[in-house]
Length: 125
Image (cartoon, rainbow, N blue to C red; front, side):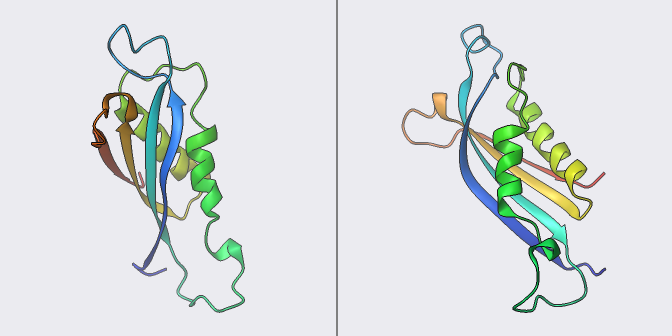
C-alpha cells in the first residue's frame, strides 16, 4: 500500500435524529443534513476499465451509514456524538477507511438558508 487515497463523497443526506440539549429539542427528532467524505487506502495497482467494485467502495454504503446506522429512539445530546457515531461505524465496516469527514447542518435552526452546524474529521484509530 502507498500513501495514495481515494476520496468518496456523499452530500446533503437529510435524516431525522433525536438530538439537542434544550427541552423543546429532546422529545422530537430534528432534521439534520449530513455529508461525508471518506478516504480509502487504495492498492498500488491502477484502476483499469474492468476493475470490479470490490476494489473501491459502494457509495450507497456511505449513505446507508447515515440513513440506517443511527439508532432510532437513541437521543444524542450533541450533534458531535452523531458525527462520532458515523465515523466509528465507517471505520468498523471497512478496514480500508483511513479518514472520515462528517458535516452536519441543523436544519431546524437554519431559517434563513444559512448552514449552522459542525464539521468533524477523524482518522483511523
